Length: 185
View 1 (cartoon, rainbow, N blue to C red):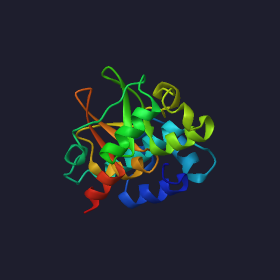
View 2 (cartoon, rainbow, N blue to C red; view 1 turned 180 degrees about the vertical axis):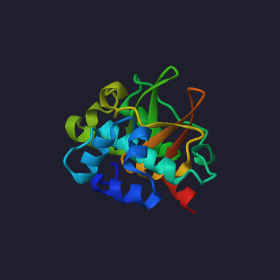
View 3 (cartoon, rainbow, N blue to C red; view 1 turned 135 degrees about the vertical axis):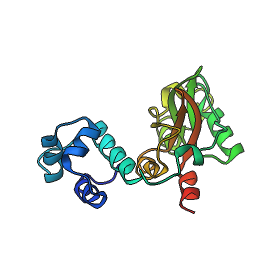
């Protein structure tokens, strides 16, 4: 989940940027930012995400830590053809709660404990060994660049089970909620 839309103005003022500057960073009109801040317009999910990422990036310009400093480089992966049973076994074995799903080198989704539990309620435990991840996985998690300021992670992790990290267009790391907690230390 993203932060509340009505917090945009407060965050923008706190970091000292204008509506015009925010609009330029996000790629929308100044009028659109004004309408969103005044509650006259609701942004699309993608626009809201861009707004919060831009605000976080502006806020963190002085921060020297990047996403690459905090990501786990060992990415456990599953394929769309793997079963829910495979995912549960791997999660239990490694004490993790989400696993990205890759089709060759392309990320196509993510499977999480929450998603499995929701799916089990629909299919029942007997279908565990047959149910493929392709039919049950959640959408692709956010992907951020290795050099992205680390403070961008907090708003992103609120709505996503994990964040993937790319370097030169290749997925090279993963960040989970526990990684963001380590960052807070």
